[in-house]
Length: 222
Image 1: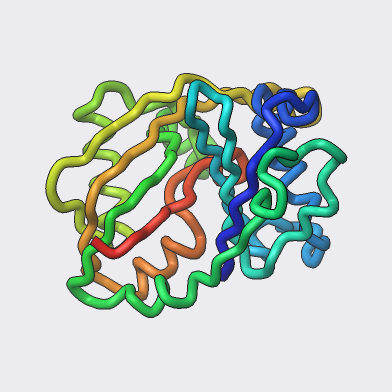
Image 2: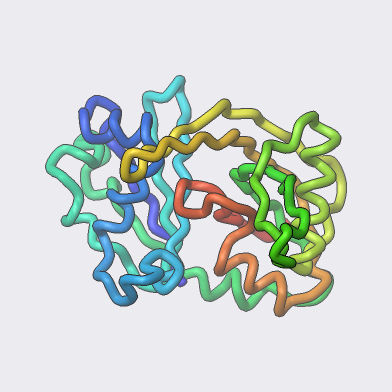
């Protein structure tokens, strides 16, 4: 697995469009990879991404986790920050992080998530259970419970305080269908309870809307 950091040009029209439409950003991310499975291109390549901003949005860092190194030359001209020069794109092998996922290991983590719950999942007249629809989880306590439950299901125990940073709503315009997601970034410390489940979560992501910039679980030894 690789983690690639790309510094984006905040003045680029293509970048600004991607900032306002998470489906457009998803498309830019996937354009850096070959199509190996048309049915599930993102999952087959293990692609997750997260956009981090600082200095009031003047510095934009796109993190892309994937099985293979992305080809940033596929991005439009001017998409990357020219001021970053050779540092505009850099990749790191995640093998050491994967190797460190052992029972009892503690990690600082960051997760940008779309906490939701399903409603209307009752069994219909035909005897089939409806998939229902997702609605946002409300309140800090509710979101913390959602996070704790999701981490536990993925072999990780939340330890100590956890900060929540609301980032507002994002929109994704896909084939004329507009989707909205409520973004929250969580920072804290986790302990590995089940290495196999934790490694799977690290590779595959946590929570819904992974194609739209959610679910990438960043880990660093605590």
